[in-house]
Length: 611
Image (cartoon, rainbow, N blue to C red; front, side, top):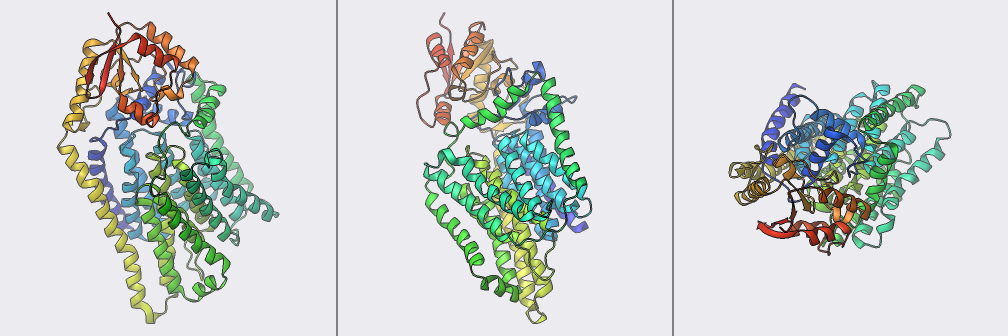
């Protein structure tokens, strides 16, 4: 254990150093970071979270983040937000490693998983403070706690799981629904509440498989979305099919239900009190957190699958075909039961493929989802090292977490695949367990070589991957870049041209404008120049997301603002609209009619009112 702790400590320190360089040498041209920061600053200044501001994220996110920024010496700034995100990145990666070590009973696999977790979650760099980062931490924390405590402290575990499901529901509602569906399936299959559990198992299994289709039902005419839906649905179906014979390991007790309800209720109560204190009511929460996200498909981001849709479909079919063969031909599981070395080799290969699917770009994680069923099958003969509940919960979370990239397939793609890491660890741990227990002495050499390959190959590959793709480029970018001059952004270093542009826009705003409004929204400059925005509606793609009444409200606020400037960036408009023309909403017309371009700074047009 000391060796594992030392290895993870070294990885943590190196990851923190590399992560710092990566976090402070990049700035996304779209401005989710600035939007989140300015929303938090406005919330701390005057409240009105859902009444005065546009935000689709739940109150638990703001309760946590705003609580941190309320601490003495923690300003609402880019530097502080990025340090907070870096801490989340490192802790989440460490928890991936700790969970993998527990699930596989292998220190080497735990260290590998920590490195891979750091690599997969490098998407944190693109959007500091994004609520998906908090849900990532919550989900991997839930798996870690469950892996360690479900057998010795089941009541505590249930309280934690109830709290996590409620918290994710009140951060990003879709992730909360996925987590809740996974927990219900796990309880129904492994901890039945009453004797008529066959009906309950069937009902929850069917509902679980239907989740992807219900989520995407209005968008299946798009080939990319259809392939996405079929891949996740196939992975869910394969999972519940292999779980048909799972045996309950413990009855669900009344104390477990009380703990589950108490954990979730405590989070709901905390979030409710926070919302009320922030001047919000239930109607505002429902409108912004539940109804607003329904307008997102087709408005932001791009399709998950591009030219590789055909290849993705083929490899996903291969994964599902393997599941079909296993389920349809009883000879296959009987053969593997009689030949543990072959079974261990297949499990080890599946674990490595699942890990590969997690780290490869774009839609590759879908292939990993079609292989999750392998981890759900416990090895025979006492080689299983984890309880059925932990196994089912980890696998089901990984399947539905794969839906995170819908409808906005940006950095969400990485979050769709990160839960494959503990699943891969289960496969590798099962393989090592079978090799240790069942392979006859005459095959000891083959067993040792196979076990060494299962640990050393991913360790070497993960280390090389992290250094080559994250480490070297991040350190090189940080050391060769130029610092920003904006308030609260002195730690950020960007390429000379980009830094010069940002600094020049900041200087012009300070010299010529009392404040500004941007098309599309670019809220970071409010923090750079330390000026309040003229309106509380500061979402980036406001041209597509705000209705006419909200735009007219903004017009009234802009009309009363003296010394106002407008910033327009056509490249950002094309990004949010996918190249389509801007809708002629009231605010767009008002800006065009009342402001004229007077300067252009690296693509940032400065508009002012005619004299």
